[in-house]
Length: 214
Image (tube, rainbow, N blue to C red; front, side, top):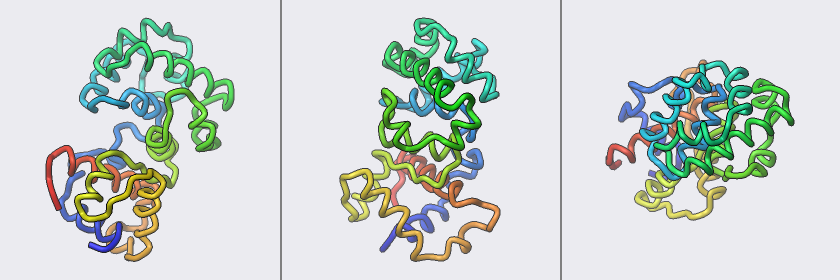
């Protein structure tokens, strides 16, 4: 295996996402992804799912990005914390979610404008958003051509002999290496590059969570 195209080709043969949503992350392109990106910090996705379900049950989230954004921005932080306890650091995450919602409305007016206009720099300036959360939001919520890197990615590459420690270095390796192969041999033209990045990251996560090796 010489580059990230070889890795993607190998991952694709394993059919890791056959039972997953088209972009891997549930409800891609919605404000719920922004919420999930904050909740999933330092916890398992299964815990996040419980929190998201609680938010749905409380009518804070209803799969309608504009309504959800306004509803969360107007919510009491203590009430939100009580709904997301399964995700850990509930008080901290509740405060960050409410504050972020207010900031999005203040800066962009609505979720549609946010998804079209938000910059990497703006996201990183928000409390509690680092490189991984930023890129999850840009790719899975805003549908941008951004490749997400996480601890699973670093561990997988190290196991294959590509030992890198900096986020940007790993991201550049993943993105840059795709030019060495014919992407059209893996995906048809209806699949955007942003979706390919989304599924690439999803495949790495699923491989690692299942304890598989390549």
